[in-house]
Structure formats: structure tokens, C-alpha cells
Amino acid sequence: MSSYKFIVNPIAGGGKAYSLMPGLIAFMKKSGKDFDIYETQGPQDAIEAARNAAKDGYDIVVAVGGDGTLNEVLNGIVGTEAILAVVPGGKGNDFATAVKMPSAIEPVCQVLLDANIKLIDLGKVMDRYFINSVGIGFDAAVAERVNRGVKPFKGVSAYIYAVLEMLISYKTIEMEIDLGDGLFTCKPTLVAVGIGQAYGGGMKILPDAIQDDGLFDVCILDEIKKPLMLYHFPKVFKGKLKHLKESKMFRTKEVKIKMSDLRPMHLEGEILRGDYMHFTIEEKAVPVLYGPE
Ligand SMILES: [Mg+2]
Image (cartoon, rainbow, N blue to C red; front, side):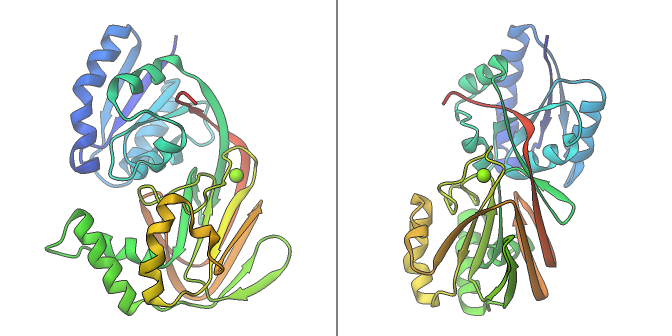
């Protein structure tokens, strides 16, 4: 019989994750399954909590929150036997969408009980694991700006403010990129590397990505004039940015990016800074609970 550890980020989605708990608890009690709940106390706490849950022998470790919570739980259970699951409760639920998790709580609970497992690929960069998608460049600069706080703005307005500020101040940087078949130099607006198709709450930057083919999908978006960025931006939500002439799509096992200066990367809710980013992938390395196809 499977046992479940729920790792809940109470502030994810402005309290959305927390509000899901009564329904989740009622359902799990009715199911008669063995389960336990841990509430995270702050950033990075879910990593340790997930590691402990795996050590304590829980079969399924469930992140209740957004992509950030999910990523911490992933980093805690890598290398253990535990199965990863997610209950979407954040602002960005791109991983939950990628593994076909329903949005209403009852069907989500059903997925947890059905325990349909799929093995998906695992990415690593700068000593951090990821299971969905990572971005470097303009969108990472926007995410970093939002993280620093743009008072009095919050939520979507904070994001819009940060986009506008970055449209004025952002400068592209020369990157040396190696996708496994030789080095080339470019000055892209952004680079996305991923296992899943979307990040940032539904931006389908890698619309053809396959989660278990052992390969990263990579999008290199060449420098675009700033006014045109605003014009083209909405296309990313429909997965149509790839049709731009500035957009180049690749598939590869390994990516190396070298820059002359430290630049931000957004990795599933986390902002990391680096001047050298080496991405590696492990095929079908993480067992994940998958929703109905
Ligand atoms: Mg792939």
C-alpha cells in the first residue's frame, strides 16, 4: 500500500495551496491511505523535508504549491526511491500542466490514488536539478527584477512593471554556446533549455519538447529590437515564437553556455546567477505521477 507525504507551501499562489488542504485531507482520510503533511517554513525548506520523507520510507512525495515548491521537492528526492507528485497550488503550475494534472482538487486526488507512474528526464545545471524548463536572458532578468520587489506593485502588475523596466534597461550579452557539436558565439535575447514545454505560467517556449526522450529542447532567440519584443511576446503563450526568423530550435544531450559576466537564470521558481552554465540530462530518471492523457 502506498504511503504519501504532502509537502505544502502555505504561501504558494497567495495561499491557494493552503486552501486546497481541507479537501485533500478529507479525500485522503476517506481513501484509507497512509499519509502525512509537512508545512514548509521558508525558502529551500522543502528540499530537506522531501529528503527526510524519502528517508522515512514514504513511497510518494507530493509537492503542494507552484513550480518553486515542486523544484525543491525534486531536489530533495533525487537519488532516492521516492515517486514525485504535484498538486497545483501556485501562480505558475507549468510542471503540473506538463504531467497532465487536473486543476480541480477531486480529480487531482484521483490521480494521486490511481498512481499511474511515468519516468521522465532529469536535468542538472549549477548543482541544481530541474525537471521542466530553465531560461537565461531577458525573461530571467525580468524574473530577477520581480523577485527583488517592485513596490507597490504585486502579482501581474509587478510583472508588467518589470517587463517595462527591462525593455528600457536590459542589454544582451555575448554568449559562447556549445550544443555538443562545436562552439558558436551569439548575442541572444534569451536562451531556454527544457525537458517540458512551458515556463513562467504558460509561456510555451519549447512547444515540441518531449519529457522522456533523453534530450533537451533548446530555443535560442536572437537579438530582437525592443519594440518588436512587445509585439511578438504574446505569441509565446501559443507556442508560436518558434516561427520567428530570430528563433532557432535545437535538440541535444548537453548544453554549455559561457558569458563574460554573471547573468541570472530562472530555474523553476529559483533565480541563480552564473557566467558558466553546463546542462546535463539523465534519461527517464524520475518516476512521476501522471494525470489522464
Ligand atoms: Mg526532451
